[in-house]
Length: 199
Ligand SMILES: C[S@@+](CC[C@H](N)C(=O)[O-])C[C@H]1O[C@@H](n2cnc3c(N)ncnc32)[C@H](O)[C@@H]1O
Image 1 (cartoon, helix red, strand yellow):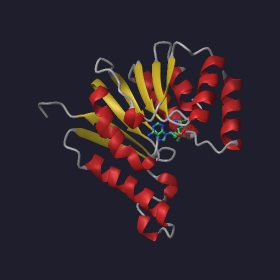
Image 2 (cartoon, helix red, strand yellow; image 1 turned 90 degrees about the vertical axis):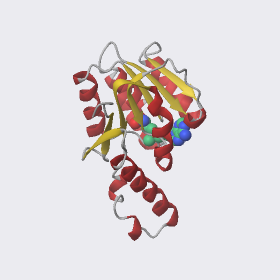
Image 3 (cartoon, rainbow, N blue to C red; image 1 turned 90 degrees about the horizontal axis):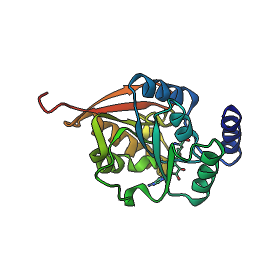
């Protein structure tokens, strides 16, 4: 497993595939163990780096991960096979916004790590699949230090992307259904928990 993880890190670097920062995956794995998380849904598999590490957190953990890029999906499948996690990690090749999940599938943790400009859409779509007491975790909320400084960004595309992340942060802060805590870990993480009905 260790060797595969090193190979995946090298592949990601060589092929310019973004993967979660080490500090953030360590945080996630600790959270998974501490909270006895079993069922995980990940939006944005990349080559399977975070899915495989999350699945390795405990023998009970199962991950469903969604990826829309075919090359990455194939690479992810290959990596899942290599570590014999076929029964622990289910890789879905589709745009997450088009996926039809069965209403019966409920997840203790939903990890949002796909297109940054669509975070609010992912949250609104997948919140219905949270198990009672489950959490939605979002990565890259600092976006390499640009978040909070969008007005100063000369590139229009980057400025618009960062603005979308800033809007998502506002959406989380003002959300009446969920309480969100923000963590200065890696590229910035949030954990959103549904408020109890009586709160
Ligand atoms: C940051 S990478 C994922 C990294 C991965 N979670 C890890 O840490 O190993 C984001 C991935 O999300 C995928 N993606 C972006 N938008 C998507 C969407 N709407 N549906 C499915 N996958 C998407 C991209 O192709 C990319 O591979």
